[in-house]
Image (cartoon, rainbow, N blue to C red):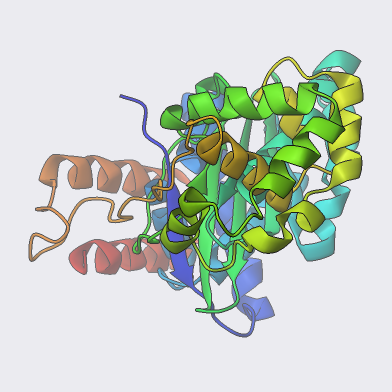
Length: 369
């Protein structure tokens, strides 16, 4: 069964000290080299796309297990480590403004890996769409501030990106893996896990949102004047259905100003393009969260095709909790993960002191699970 995944983490101030980061780079490169040499680049991408393995990887490198900074620092260390190695795998992008350079880095590194122009074009598209889906198609209050795109020499890819919720100071991490993506807009993540579940989340990637996706596409294929009239009609205070919808949905969704928040230039652009499906519509420049919400509202109230408002997040515990929360410890899974990480650490080309410290951190991590 395919799983989907997100991890929610508290925000921490500060950054990793240089002495620690340098050792993280060294250890990250050594462990990656062992895994790639033993199992290949595809397997390493699979492990990065597993939020539980990723969390354990960060702990072994020496970072706080529950910190949002684990994502940015681990990927930063891995990016620097792989830039010094010739392992057939590279990391593009990063935190903040660095993420904006992802397309440029994909082209530069992809050419060094010997990838064709058409493949590079597909990779840039995958990077852009994975970010847009998690910023726009899934609306849980976590706009992205970190995006990393990992490429293997055979053209396979993975994504590790993270969004921030300023109000409650938590972060949410998103994992993607190319071999698991059958559609960018239908449950495309490799795993969705987290410690908290939001009461209302607009999830246009849910399978149950299929009808809403189809209606949204049909709406933008019509002349914008028709869509404007439909949106304006929902502002009528006599609409009892609208009142019920407002009561059931997040307060942030201001229906009374919906006609102003929809990007009508983007709607016009979509009409001219005539998208064949929801992915093509979402890829249109200017289509953002408010436009997606507006179309979802019209789809539900006028055409009877509601989107999913269920948060796709699941618990982030890798093996269960000692008190049986959220479920009993899965001993076989824990033993297997322990064996893999211990083997990687023992065989890694690192100093004895760092090796012992890494093994100790792994033991402490697992004993606390």
